[in-house]
Amino acid sequence: MRILMLSWEYPPQVVGGLGRHVAELSEALAEMGHDVHVLTTGDAADTPSGETLRGVKIHRVKAYGPGGRDFVESVTHLNISMLEGALRLIRQGYDFDIIHSHDWLAAHAGKALKHGLMRPLIATIHATEFGRNHGLHNDLQRHISNLEWWLTYEAWKVICCSQYMRGEVQYIFQLPADKIRVIPNGVRAEDFAAHDGFDRVSFRRRYAADSERVVYFVGRLVHEKGVHVLLEAIPWVLAQEQDVKFVIAGKGPAEYSLRERAYQLGVSQKIYFAGFVDDQTRNRLYACADVAVVPSLYEPFGIVALEAMAAGVPVVVSDTGGLSEVVRHAENGLRAYPGNPRSLADNILAYLKAPDFAAYIKERAVREVREKYNWRLVAAKTAAVYEEVLQEFQSSPWVEAESFPTDYLLTETRLTTRGAQARYQDTNSADHTVRQLEESLAEPAGAGYFSLPGPYALPSAKKTGEPALEWDRWTGQEEGTFS
Image 1 (cartoon, one colour):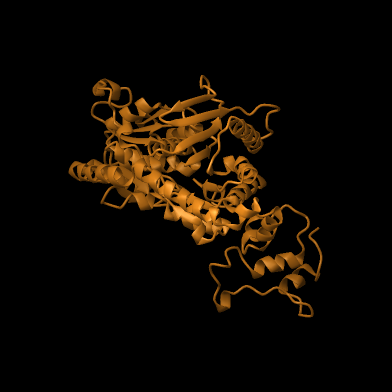
Image 2: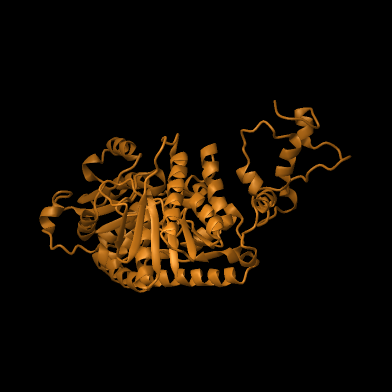
């Protein structure tokens, strides 16, 4: 198959896990014999605009012109550059069977290429704005969530990485179950071992004393990763085991508040903020670590847990999201209550106090990662989705019509999706009438998935000629707008 991947990030420019996912998946598909092209950003320094790595043809584009007023507008500019890059490839004689967009960051280009080239679009949703923020609280978040919904609407099939994410995208975007395919992330286990024969003792002394055991976190320093929960757990750990050093690797906007909180807790001397670490340093730290911690509050999958398991480090994770599916308590890792420092500390101590148990968990985890979460298996499952979509596409009426459905269908679907209005309406608008409020009360978000029993049932919307609802009496008006 001829596959065109669209991704906002790709190594060496890596912000989160998305870029590594796209790279590993693309390379595994290329190893299977597929012709894989990746369109991505070219903003990283010293990266060529075009190259072939491990069989993957990488095309990097730059967003030029006036800078965007915000991140979303800058991403839109990048999508235009992606579209221009795709047109150059078409002009050079390339053709594609499948367009695969990763997250809303490639939604505009994916939709345009789908309709322009008349090729089916696949979307992978790695995370949602709703999930990251535990709801939608401002116009920017609602706009991003709308872009995510739009991408899932335009996609022929939507891939997500866990059963947890399946439920999330069904609830937030009202997707039909038969449109979703669950394919877990993978890990190249050999990439997370220290192969360079480094001086372990000297390297370890940069971060911890010889007598101290190392508890290791690596990831972005943002609220959703739960690093603040780890900080709150440190005094509980030190109360029972004093010779422990906590190494926190990564960068992010929460770094300074975390340092301040460590000082307030009086544990600064027991924490080493390592900042951003390259792959070699990351692997060396894994080789020196006694415990790896993933205390996330929101984690669609938790590939960092797989990486730690592949590196042979026993893990403690939050019992949330996809982490709950990857880690089985006391079998291949330990799970702590999300956002609970005491629970996190107890599970860290379980390893520190029982080295034999930690060794048992490590052995089980390494074997399972190699057997169940390798990229060859992930690529095979992804290719099977591509083949399924191509077969459906070839037998669809759109091939004969030489066009996909027109835009008015999107509007109709958007306005009639149950629960969508309540979740995505612009709450700052002055056009909300009392009747609209009554209608939203009569059918809450997610009404298609649950109903409230008798005494808790919400009042039905008022019909013509019926007495005014309580709301009408409270406001002193039967119809009208907010003022």
